[in-house]
Length: 106
Image 1 (cartoon, helix red, strand yellow):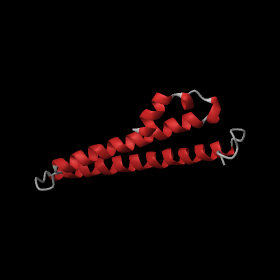
Image 2 (cartoon, rainbow, N blue to C red):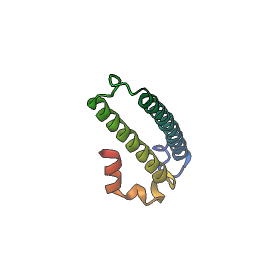
Image 3 (tube, rainbow, N blue to C red):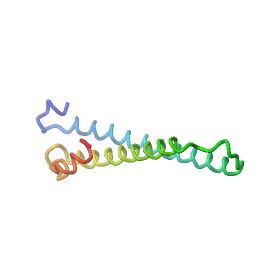
């Protein structure tokens, strides 16, 4: 819809913003639920003081990079919402190539 309108119709932009907003919402819910689970697991594990239930170093590194990836996706989606909020031609963020490359390309 956006590619056929030549910038005159905002219907495609509005659909993209709605989709990105839903993605930010669902990702935020996921982050809250994952954090709740991790806190409850850590408290339960701490109360047991079991030595055999410790997390391996590799798994902790994995969880750290997974959290970083989720955070980066969240930042990118919020950026895209702000970028598209004024359409394909009206906003300043859509013309900022450095920020676009940093958040999209990398």
